[in-house]
Image 1 (cartoon, rainbow, N blue to C red):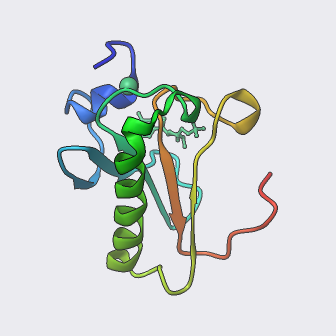
Image 2 (cartoon, helix red, strand yellow; image 1 turned 180 degrees about the vertical axis):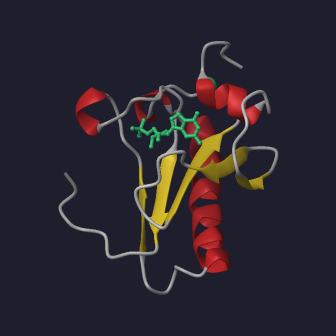
Length: 115
Ligand code: 5GP
Ligand code: ZN
């Protein structure tokens, strides 16, 4: 746990969030500023700063995140219509929280290219 990290605090239960799924490796909760009817954030429990900090030891973790994203999209009913799983990396990529996370967006037509 990194003491000044808001997502570490959510994972530790110190800051409230609407939890959609959790297990030993990851936790999934609603984004507080949703950009679509469904907007979930999938994070590893362990603090990883950005995509660039991943190592081969994290390969199973990333595979697990993708598996759970698809399962949640199915369970919440927007998988068949379509959805987006996106990671913002560093400033120009739009990252503002420095704990690795994946946005799972669904429930509307998502434009392309993104802004
Ligand atoms: P980024 O721009 O870093 O990819 O995405 C960060 C996301 O975290 C944003 O969509 C923002 O709304 C969300 N967020 C930031 N702080 C909190 C918080 O305290 N609780 C929740 N649920 N979401 C947050
Ligand atoms: Zn963290």
